[in-house]
Image 1: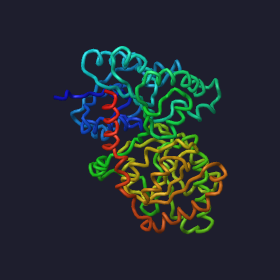
Image 2: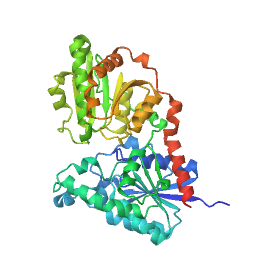
Image 3: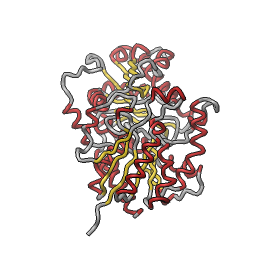
Image 4: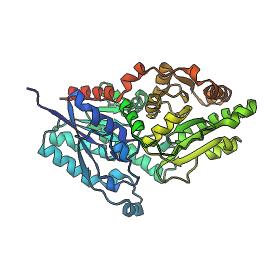
Length: 427
């Protein structure tokens, strides 16, 4: 008789938080049982989150899931000392509760997912003390090119220096490492030559077709953010610092549309929603200044504050077309492309040529794809993007739909199955 196998998932944020980092843990918590693993989630109590909760997202978590919640220091206290990171505010509680769980019950594996990344340091003592293997999951780079560009004595620069010093010790004791792209794994291995490629895997966040049930559950009286008299093309997600030049090129393409077809341009509205990644970031505009510089500010609507997950899905489903924009970094893979593809809306994408997102989108189809290898390649794209915007606005049916069979390996169920196989291999 095979005893039940249990994995402890350490994720400081978990629904009803609506941060993007919750979806890895949410998907695994819902689908690991089908792979033969019972998940237990260790997170911080949502009373200590700074963001507004998303109850509808919370309703997408399996009702029988065991969730262990711990307290944290209040942000209003720690920010006086320059500390806002939730995992630091809850460091003592997370560590002690993890040790308690490992010492009082059978836990067969531990998965620590980030960001935030500091809980990954628990790998240094979990297996040596309890004999339980640890898997570290990097949803984003802890050590990033953007961080390296910051002033050394700035808060971001100091965080980068700290990441450089802590990433190695966390990885040393991990039995397996996952990230969202092969390029990100390659960069990890380049920084730490002793990392064994055979104990690394690239596993995107993926998407869950069941999430679309949210759209049917949402009240029909919710007012739409979109003007029904316009052709609405929407980007939903953060406007990252390393994405600014891509947005500039996209808006140059929009300016070209206006020059060639002013009547069509007058009917276009490009929406950029949640660009600040903050629920209360209503004054942090990053797209508007670019649109003003290109003379198309009247065709652009920017809503900096992040939407609740269900509302974001609804907005994408209501848009005539979607805008999928990546970063100038080759490792970048946008988790938002999976829910976007599930809505089956036509799209225009702009990613680095080596990005895994670009490879998937071009294979799946259903949209217009642009890519670049360097800054010179990016500079030559506005005219092509203008033609793409025109086609997306006037003839979206000609783009067809993304092949759902190609998306199945990236479904939440399939990704959970791959994690289950990783855990099996560690026993």
